[in-house]
Structures are given as structure tokens and as C-alpha cells.
Amino acid sequence: MSSEYDRNYLSVGAWMFILLVAALPIVGWLMVIIWAFSGENETRKNYFRAILMWIIMVTVAVFVLAGLGRLQDVEKKLQGWTHRA
Image (cartoon, rainbow, N blue to C red; front, top):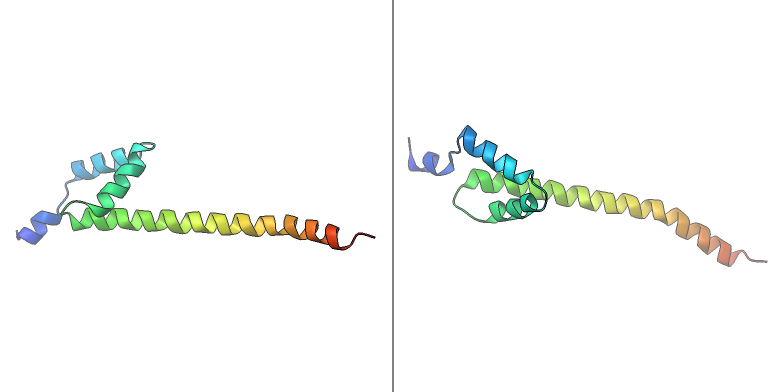
């Protein structure tokens, strides 16, 4: 085995521990951020960077969809203000 392989290898037990910790409320979020940017294991870092990207994309999508839903309420208020007789 090469040193490159040894550096990026994670056993099934290690993955089970990592996924358990990542599933914990608050502590898991912090560990996802820490594991995404620290350590020498590129596989683990890339995995958690991908998780962070999904979190960011879903969060943006939720805000955009929520914003679009609110636009109808704003439009009704504007029409009420402009169409007063």
C-alpha cells in the first residue's frame, strides 16, 4: 500500500463513528465544519465539504421559495394602497 492510500483510508468503524457524531444536534454541525477544513484525510474533508455545499444550496432554496411565497402578500398590500378610492 502506498502512503497516499494510507493517508486517505478510513475503516468502516471510523465511518460509523464519524456519521454518528455528525448526526448529533449542534455538536454534529460543529464537527461537520471542523472536519471539512481540518486534518490530513482528503476523503473525509471532501465528504464534509460536499455536505456543507448541500446545506448551503438547500438553505438558499428555502429562502428563495419562502421569499417568492411572501411576494404575493406584498403585492396585495401594494395594490390595497394604490387602489384606494
